[in-house]
Every structure is written in C-alpha cells, then in structure tokens.
Image (cartoon, rainbow, N blue to C red; front, side, top):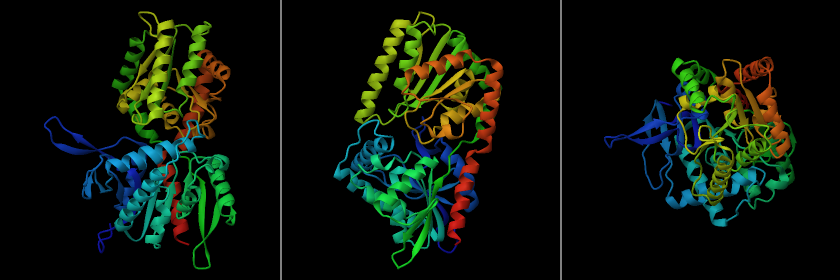
Amino acid sequence: MSPSTGRFDFVVVSNRLPVDRVIDPDGSARWQRSPGGLVTALEPVMRAADGAWVGWPGKADVEVEPFEADDMHLVPVALSAGEVERYYEGFSNDTLWPLYHDVISPPAYHREWWESYRAVNERFARASAEAAAPNATVWVQDYQLQLVPSMLRALRPDLTIGFFNHIPFPPYGIFSQLPWRRAIVEGLLGADVIGFQRASDAANFFSAVRRLFGYGMRSPEVRVPDGQGGHRTVIAKAFPISIDVESFEEIARRPEVIARAAQIRHDLGDPGTIMLGVDRLDYTKGIGHRLKAFGELLRDGSARTGEVALVQVASPSRERVEAYMQLRDEIELTVGRLNGDYSTISHPAISYLHHGYPREEMVALYLAADVMLVTALRDGMNLVAKEYVACRHDEDGVLILSEFAGAADELKNALLVNPHDIEGLKEAMLRAIAMPKRERSTRMRALRRRVRENDVARWSQSFLDTLRHVGSR
C-alpha cells in the first residue's frame, strides 16, 4: 500500500473475492479463504506488494465495506440480484461461456444482459481505479470482466494493466456471432498484456483483431492507436496456468491420506482398476461421452463390474441455468440406467457423487485411482489433470486426456484422446487398464517433471515479469 495515498501498488480484479462468508454454529459470521489455484498463485505477490483484491463477495444485495481477511486487503463490489441474474448467470455464463467453448450449447443473446454486463464491468473498473495507487499494476482476471481493461485505461492512463483469460478464446468464425464482438475486443485491448491458456487462443484473438480492426500486428504484439496520433504496444500470448504442485504432493504423502486412499479402494470392493472422473457438472467436460464409452465396454464384456469401477465426482455448477439443469438430468439418467444394467449387490458399476469434497479427500481419490479420465470437449486448461499428476508420488497411474483441453499442450505423455471418438476413447480405456507397470511409471515420471517445471508460481511470475517489462517502456 502507498502510505501517502492509502492506495495499493498491486491490484487483482476478479469476479469473486478470494474468500467465502461462513456462518459458524454459534451464528457468528467470518470470512474464509476460498480454495483455488488463483489465490495460491497470487498470494505471495499480494503479500510482497501489500496488494488489494477487488471482487464480488458472492451474495446479492449485500453492501460490504473494504476489509482485511487472511492477511489480504479486500475491496468488495456489490451486485444486485438482478445483476447476478443478467450479468453473471446471463451474459457471462449463458452467452460467453458456451460461445467461447465452441458452441457446445447454444449461446443466448439478450440486449438487457449485455447492458448489465457493461454496467457491472464499469463498476469493477471504478472500484479498481479507486484502489490503485499512482502508476500501480492492475491484473484483471477472466471472461466476466473483459471490458474492464479499456474502461480502466480511460479512467487511469497511468496504470499498467494486465488481463488473463482463463477459458478458451474461440476461432473468429464462432466469435463473430457475438453482436458485441467489437466492444469485447476493444475492452481487452485496453490491457498492456493479454494472457491466454494456449497459443491457439492467442492466434484466435489476433484473427479477431485483424478482422475487426485491421491493426498492425506481429505476434505477440498488436499496435493499438493511442488516440493522440501515436500507438501503444499490446502483448497477447500464451501463459499456461498451473497448480501449487508442492501443496498437492505434501497432502498426498500424508499417512492418513494414503490410508484413506486404501480405504476407498476397499469400499469399492478392491477392483483391479478404478477409473476416476472429477469435474464440475458442465456440458464442456465430456462426462456423457465417457459414460457412453464405459457403458459400451461393460455391454460388450471388455470391462466387467467387480474388475473395473468408475467413480464420477460431478460437483454442482450453475444450477439455476437451464442448460445445466438439463445436463444433470441426462447424466443421472445415464448413470441410473448403467447401474441398473450392470451393477451387482456388492459392486456398483458407477459410483456417482454430485457434491464437492475437501482437498484431502480429492487427493485420496487421486491416489486410489488407477486411471484418470479428463475427457473435456473444450477446456481452457483443466487443472484436475495436473492435480492428479502432482499427487502421484508413487509414479503410477494413467492419465487419459482430451486433446481439446489446454493441458494437452504440456502433458504429452498422457494418453491423448478425441472424446467425440467413442471407439478411440474405449481403446484408450482398455489400453490404460492393460498398461504394464514399467510404461505407467515412465509416462508418469515425464508428466510429473513437466508439471513441476511449470507450477503456478512460475505462471504468475512469467505473466507479471512480462507486464513489468511492458510497463517500464
């Protein structure tokens, strides 16, 4: 914090604050740090810079003054119930999310949603401008706030502004469907550095800039008019996000977690192979595709209940959005049908769990699983794949990974699959089940080396080093 102004030299801006409001049994309320890689990645930077975090506290129609929690300065941005419905559930998650994920589900375009999105982005920009010290660095996060960089630059041209897009950026043929495509790209170009998960996402963004504005560019640079007859340079490139590898491995080595993993295997009837899927219940994750492939393996006798078990953790997600309600019905109908057809009294074919778990339980599941199924139809990164690898200090286990997840660019020693190819997915499952120990260990060692080399601290350092270099020009 700058002592002279009471403002902050480093400000993070995201849709949500990194804390959740928790009500204790005695009725008292407190703030508890949210689990998640972004908080872990930025916490050291926040502490070193005495920075602030701007975001929505997660409850509609709640006005909260700036406060401190978990040694972080937090600046709440209030949203009404109507804004949560229009800006967040509507434009962010029923327009942008499906559009940016290759239109797996049809996007909805409503002008009132767009107006709310623009108004909320303006509120975030103003809150960030007020929190930032002169010449501060502001790092804006994700697709809910794509207009903030340009709005913030208009309010505070002295700032160095970064933006990171955690989800894919679509090809222009898809992106062009968005009625407000120019405004979105203009919003992003307000940043000095724009980060994407994959090089292909950055290339898609360059294509949109070229088609919509015709600005001069030479990857990774875009020359943007500064409004005064000159230009400023915007860097747009891939900075693949990662996880806190050490914390996952530390948990995975705890004796009680190892014992819990053994208990999970026992509770499942000690099958020869446990396959595991861990996802938000989202249509981008390919849960239905893996259930279809597994069901066909059971049907044709290639996999037998008691010898192979599938555990599917599907944590609740956006349950007020119609497409997600329909997806839950479809998935649960499929699970019920397969269990009805193939389960025995002592061995369910699929153990389906529609709720979240604490990190320790997730790590125990990773250790118990012989095969990790990541079959996303489109995913910015998919950190579950990296979490599984980080936990496997025994250098065992097989990762089946969709080539449409950003993690596939790095984790090339996984079994890469096209989840739309059900026959190919079945072949990968059978190959994983039959894979010799020596090959499993060779692949897992290579995967673990890659995840260690690019952990979450390196991700944030790489982005911020680039941002500081641009800001010092």
